[in-house]
Image (spheres, rainbow, N blue to C red):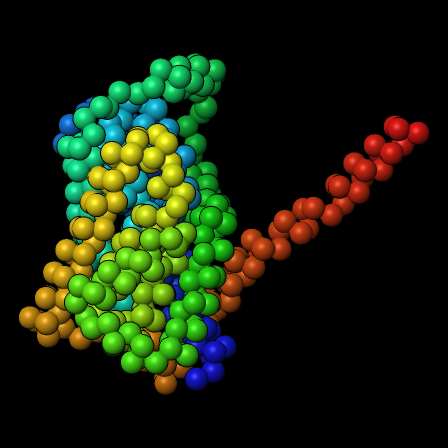
Length: 357
């Protein structure tokens, strides 16, 4: 199977939904300010844990972008449970990854993914709240936050117009969001290409479709620094190679929520007890959701609706144009630093040398 053809087919299939998802992410960014999120999670209790999951699920933040937001929420007074549920739900799903899942994996996965993410977020938050009762903030964190907030109390900006909000949504969706996800989206698409084209089905079938296969996916997903969007094509290629739907779901839940950076932040900011409860909640709920999904597929006889299987008819022109646009936006992320780095550096060096003489 031609590697380039497989890669291009993946890009064409996913491009319209990714572009839509990035735009919706920008719209949500404009509609939901971070100050509102912090105020909603500042109250302790089970309600704030649920709010953390519900608010975090649609937010356009990847595995790396959620960390500073979660820290700000914690410093604003959010409980450890609410902070943990937010840390789980936000990177595990989002409007961009849901639309991408619908395009590549089908409507069942597009529905199962956010529901499972919400459940795992609530479970992790409840476990953190149960096993780590010390919910106090260190004094230095509180004072740092208050001084930071007080220094920013300047004149409130004027409310932007609808056109300005729409322009800001486009800039954020097709600028910041693509910059945040370009690297890992590229890695995910390339990995999916190699798995689809080169890995035989017998390699994954040897692990079966039950608990052992899911544990393998946990081991694979734990160290990976991968966002929800980038994990989607990898999961699709794994399904195409023969793993069960439940095992693919486990990978999509554990990969984005349990990377090394997130675990380090939880250990430092929330403590070892919270980290252990967080890991047990994420992994345990992911496996339970995976087992339930496998049972549903078997009971109702649902077919796998993988877009990777239907490639013979070609694609309409509008899909190919969308793929070209997506590739251009991603390529811009890699080329922009090269152009920004050239002339200013030479000028500064020249001025410095002249002043020295």
